[in-house]
Every structure is written in C-alpha cells, then in structure tokens.
Image (cartoon, rainbow, N blue to C red; front, side):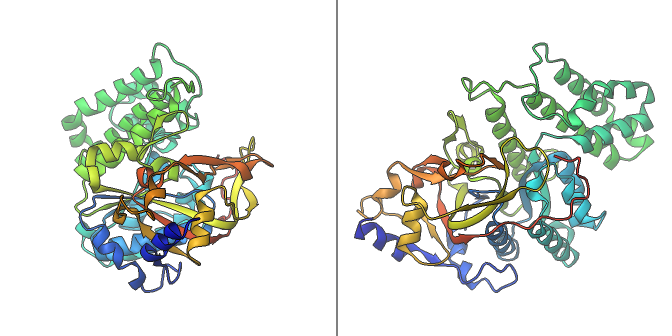
Length: 423
C-alpha cells in the first residue's frame, strides 16, 4: 500500500467507538451530513452470518430512526412472511421468535435479529402511528403466508373460487428456478386470482372490511411475483431475465413502492435497506446481473447511498454447500492482502467507516477507489474447503458510496429451531 492511500484512509476514516446497539451514537454523527438528502440507505454485508454486522446495522438503524426520521427497514427477506413481523413491530401481534423463524431464511433466525425486532416494537410503542418504523420484506420467494392468506380469504368471500389455489400451493415451498413453465400457467393462475380479488374490492369490503380485502389483494400480488420468479431460468446467459436478475429487479421495485407509497403505504423519511453487499452495490454482480442497488441508483440518483460492510478476519456462520437444513456452522478466515479488506485493515486499526463520496478523484490517495480490486463475498452457503478463496470483483467508488469496516468477525447466534422443516 502506498503512503498516499494509507494517508487518505487515515484522514477520512471515522472511528466506531463501539458496535453495541445500546451505546450513545456520537460517533455516527458525521453520517447526518452525509445522508442529509438520501432517500434509501443500503446496508450491505459480505457474510450473512457475522454477529458484528447485525450489531452495527442495529446501531445505524437506531440512528436513522431517531435522528434522521427513518420509518422503514426493508429486508432481504420473504415479503410474504415479513408482513406478520411488521404487524408485531407496529401493533404487538404474535410471537416475535416464531415470526422471525418463518421469514424463510435461516440467516435471520438469530438473537441479533430478535434484538432488532424487539427494539423496533419498543420504539413504536412510544411514538405516533405516522412515526412508527415498519419491517418490510422485499423478496417474493417462499410465499407460504400469502398462499394461506389468499386461500383463507377466498374461503370467506368466494368459496367457489377456493379451488383456484390448489395449483398455487407450490409457491409455499418452491425455490426460484424450480422449473420452467413455458406457458406461464402458474403466473397466469396467480394473476387471475389477484385480478378477481382486486376487481371485487367493493363487494368484498362489504362482506369483510376494506382493510381485509386490501390485505388479501396484496398477498395475491405477492403470489404473482413469486410465480414469475419460481419459473425463471437459471441460465447465466440472460442476466436481465434469469432468476437472479428478476429477483433483484423485484426487490428494487419493492423498495420503490415503499418509498413512493404504492399500494402498501408510503414512508416520509429515509428507508434503511438490508441486503448482501452483492445486492446493495450500484453495479452488476455474478454473470453481469444488474444488482438491486443499480436499479435504485438509476431511479433515485444520489438519493440512494450504498454502504458496503467488510471485515478483516475471524469467523462467520454459513451452511456448507449442499446442506439444506440447520443454522450453519462456523467458518474461519484470516486477513488477506489480496483483497481490499487487507488494505483497510493495514491502513486504520479497529472498526470504522469512510464516506467514499468525499474522495477528490484527482488525488493520488483516492485513485485506488476507482481501480479494479477484489473483495470477499460469502453467501448463505459456502464450499467446505475452498470458501477462503471466494472473492468478487470490486471498484470501490463505483460499487459503493461508503464502506464500514469491522476488524474482527464472530459468528451470529442462532435462535432455537422451532421448525426444523423450514429451509
């Protein structure tokens, strides 16, 4: 590392005094100016199983809510099951542990996520309804709650149409790319159910309530997105239209609806977006797949801020490739000078964050921000032996607007497994 690069990082880094979500947040105050005109704050992570990432995001979320007027957390989690978590944080309905368990992803079944959900509930108890912070899922896959909700509602208002749900029951458990559907029968069936409910809003509102029919319509729309995603191709040769490209596009559209209002209620303050670094980045990932963040950057410009989260060394939780059950196991990794993490660890000790938008592109110290590099990238599952070599291409200032660096990673802490059949 040149002295200029090290000097630039040392000058621009802002030390994180602690990762404790309950601590004062004076060290986050510089973010107030950085995020002043931002509508969406993307909070990334290079692993889904790092305890420190959960805790840092919890701290940042509290800061955004209390000091910046944030009223929504948009999660890379099933939008179907997340509606029940939202009911809990807004109204106290249900058991939070069981609701988190139903989110569809083992990565969120952690003590750290429970702490976040419980804090959101505690915050919402003491504020007016228009200042409550919502919990919103943005991923349309694994729509079990929507299958149950739409089936139950049709049973009340139009039992003769309940049979329409038989074909859609596969959406409760099917993963994206399950199988091609050239005639799009599954999607057409879901669209027919959604159209039927939407077209009879006034009639069904009299039989139940406007709120009940609106909820059923929204669940039916989730089924439409799930049906489309499930039957998309895994072919990497069509990055715009394969499973990966369509999933990120749908997640971006969910965030846009949340910000703009749409049919699901809007939010006045900034939205906190929680997803993997690959999703929140402003460019492409994998085989040229446009990332969720690239759609948001195109829509909101500088109103979208992508904060990538990286770590130096330590351990994290992930499933071994091929395993479909269990909370993941511990994986260890040391500092690598082949990746940008090694540069960040060497430049500034401890935990910190840096605003990449503050870089003077003409300075020697900031030149590395616009040069191709590499970063670690671990998903929910990793190979048993070769995971240490998992890296992804990176051009720091093109992919992110800021970086948060944690010097040591430890494993997230799983909740009790209430439903071992859940993936």
